[in-house]
Amino acid sequence: MSPTDLSATSLYGGIAYDLDFAGAALTPAEGDRFAGLLGDNVVLMIENRGPPVVCGTVSVSLVRLVYLHETFARKRWRQQ
Image (cartoon, helix red, strand yellow):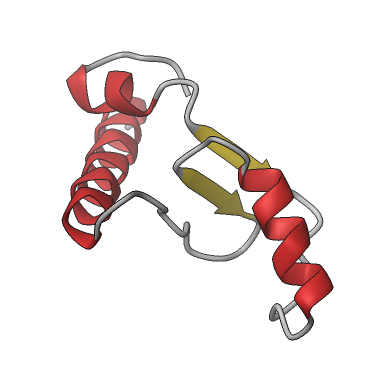
């Protein structure tokens, strides 16, 4: 995602991607795989799923999730 506005800038370089998601994380190994993919990022974009946002507090996570939603909504609006 390119930093095209303030919301996107706050997430720039902080998004990891999982393109090999095969279902619910039912084993500790799958949880470890998610954690490894997330690394130091705050958002994990999981193929065909919603994005988990991981921050130090629930309030910061919610703000980041709102920024993510706003960024993609603006991007979609620009493409129409």
